Each structure stands twice: as C-alpha cells, then as structure tokens.
Length: 250
Image (cartoon, rainbow, N blue to C red):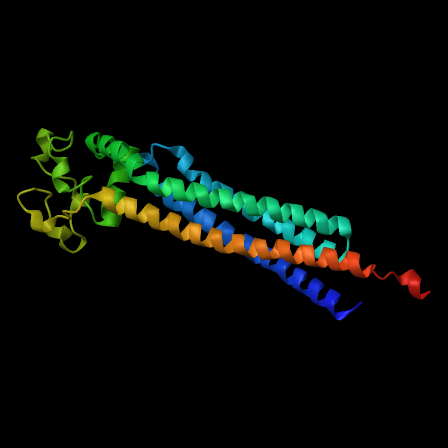
C-alpha cells in the first residue's frame, strides 16, 4: 500500500471523525434554536419557522451514521462503501444548503410574523392564562414593556380593569427598582419603556444568524469530504490496490 493510499485513507478517517463532531455540534445548535423559539412560541404565527432547526437535528442524527459508514468503508477499502459514503455526503450537503436557505428566508419573515400575535397576546393579557405568563416572562427577561413601547398597554384589557387603576403589569418594572414600582404610567422612571417586539425580533434573528453560520461551515466541510472520497476512489481504480487478507500470507 503506497503513501498516497495511506494518506487518503487517513484523511478520510479524520473526515469521518469530523462528521461525528459536526453531528454533535449540529445537534446542539438545533436544540438551542428550538429552545429559543419555544420561549416565543405564542407570538409566532408561522410554525414552519422551526423547519431549519428540525432539519439541523435530523442532519445531526444522520451524520453520526455517516461517520460510522465512512470509517467502515475506509478501513475495508470498499468501493461500494465509498460510493454509499459519497452519496450520503451529497444528500447531507443538499439538506444543509436547504436549511441555510430556509434560515435566510425565515430570518427576514420574523418581523412580519411577530407583530399580530404579539398584539393579540398583549391585548388579551389578564395575568392568569399561560399566554399571560409568557408575556410576563418576556417582559422580565428582555426588560421591555408593551409591543412597541410601554404606552401600548393603554386601552388593553388589563389597563382598563377597574382593579388595576390604569397600571401596567409589574413585569414591566425595572429590576433594580421593582420594590418601589406600582406599574402606574405616571411613574415612568420605574418602568422599562422600550417595547418587546424589537428585542424579540433581534434575539430570534441573532439565533438564526448563528445557526446559518454553523450550517455554512459544516457544508464546506462536507464539500471537502466529497472531494476526499472521490480522490480515494479514483486512486483505488488507478492503482488497482485491494484490501489485504490473511489468506494472502498463508
């Protein structure tokens, strides 16, 4: 077995290991995106916005399998195995490109998808329902109040309730001033005045941008993986090398 074959097999084995590492990385990214979207689920009208994350997780599972196939095919120097490895890599590459394109599309749709569901959730807020708890969580975590700003609460179901004295929810209060905050609009110094829509949009777009960068990086790795498989397969055909068997030394 010449040096070129040994080098090619070594590279291919390393690429198989990279597939395992990439699969773990993609699984983490996909889970992170799903978890981030879950926090804002009541405000997302288009549930297909989760498609990029679901594709990433599916790709991660397949990549673990690919790594195993790649190792076995390389060690056994199987022409069929290398061919299967190449086809699988190509399919994964196409899926990653699709996820990248979907991520780009939904990154631009985030703003239009958020507005109406957020307005409805804030208008229906009563402090008791699950959607109301999500609104509180959102305002506390992002330190925001209202959709566009804190005055959005004026005219809402909560604001007009006689027992609330025209106040906003206490989740609008600044964290460091919460003890003295009553939620009254006449005391804006105690309130977070910036709206939540812009912050949610920015958070989701940042998550998608991060996922898209990771997908693009792994797609480039897949490209070099396909190239390495082709090099090894062509070298096998040119040199006509065959795997060693114990019977040859009998």
